[in-house]
Amino acid sequence: AKAEGRRGYRFFEASMDARLQARRLLELDLREAVRRGELVLHYQPQMDTEHDRITGFEALLRWQHPTRGLVPPADFIPVAEETGLIVPIGEWVVRRACADATAWREPYRVAVNLSPAQFKSKALVASIVHALADTRLPAQRLELEITESVLLAETEGNLATLHALKQLGVKISLDDFGTGYSSLSYLRSFPFDKIKIDRSFVRELSEREDSAAIIRAIAGLGQSLGMATMAEGVETREQLERLRTLGLTEVQGYLLSPPRPADAFPEIAPRITSA
Ligand code: C2E
Ligand code: CA
Ligand code: CA
Ligand code: CA
Image (cartoon, rainbow, N blue to C red; front, side):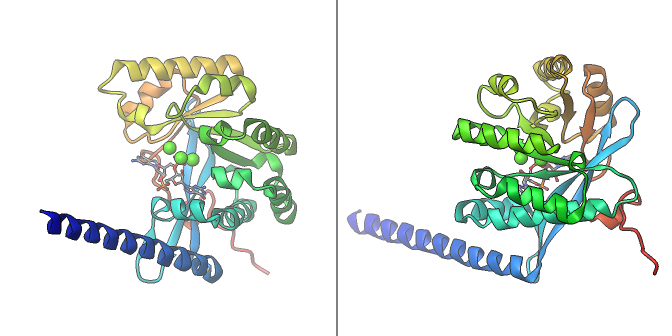
């Protein structure tokens, strides 16, 4: 039994090593990916529920890997977060999204996800100022999506950062709303432009009456606080109609379209500039 235990322990050690090694390789690979320009942005349309008109597109990061194919953000953003690589990657995302948006036929908003580590970086505000100046994208066309975890840590400094960003004229959305802690106090301490209700509430809409009640309450809250309210993960027409009835002002999800490269959408396909 003792020998087995030792073997078990050794095995565990080996697999830990293997995991660490795999992580280190991923980190190196990711560093190279940034240098080689393998990161790409896909876009997913957002629609208002009053006129069924497109209002903007969310930029979603993918890694076009030479051998692994298109890698989703869940497979590399956690490592980018842990290693701090998310800061240069996030700066690239903002810059790329702003540059892309200036080439769109219509002046839709472009929404970008900010990670907590990016938010803590002292250079965040300056990097956004520069991205806007260099691409000449009007600030109000840029929307920054942040999650509650950003507000949870280091509240004073983060709140100051949020106000500095708001001062620039960019829009600020609270992402994944309903999945974190004590969400309501955040709504009081910062004037968000939009609340994005987490996909889980939409998914449970048909099975759970309380999901509908929560969504209705958030829609009402948004209305009285002057914030737009959006549902993400809308996949069916039934969900869309239900969310409209519940009072949400915007929707996003596979029903409209999954995220795709910009040139898949006539509305934002890069203009062909003829000389
Ligand atoms: P998120 O910000 O909550 O983005 C929404 C995710 O839901 C996206 O996954 C999107 O493809 C997916 N989605 C959209 N509509 C539907 C639907 O109708 N049904 C279902 N099942 N899923 C839908 P994706 O692109 O894999 O991104 C996952 C997460 O990775 C994002 O969640 C965001 O937290 C993070 N992420 C993506 N791009 C970036 C980025 O540039 N920077 C940072 N920091 N995080 C990013
Ligand atoms: Ca988001
Ligand atoms: Ca989400
Ligand atoms: Ca998220």
